[in-house]
Length: 106
Image (cartoon, rainbow, N blue to C red; front, side, top):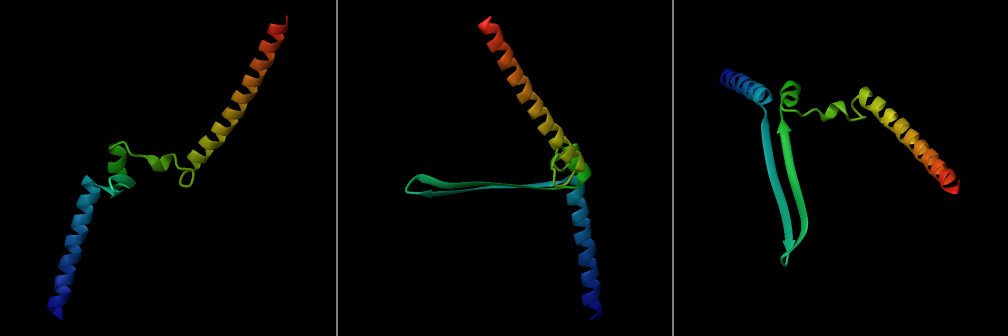
């Protein structure tokens, strides 16, 4: 029994070391699945998996969580600001249309 506990402890340490290295360096797993029937492509799936720490991901230029409204209040604020800007653009467009109609009638 003591041997099993010792082996388990060593394996845990190795697993922790491997996880630390993967998060520190990052790892990319990529694969594509294409399904054809009689020479006609029916389905194409592209799989991409990146495992890295947040610091490493940001170093690589990956920061999607900062603009995801479900994960960031800043992203929610940006969504509200975008909606306000869209409505203001629509109002400006309507004003310009009205002004051009008035100018055309003169």
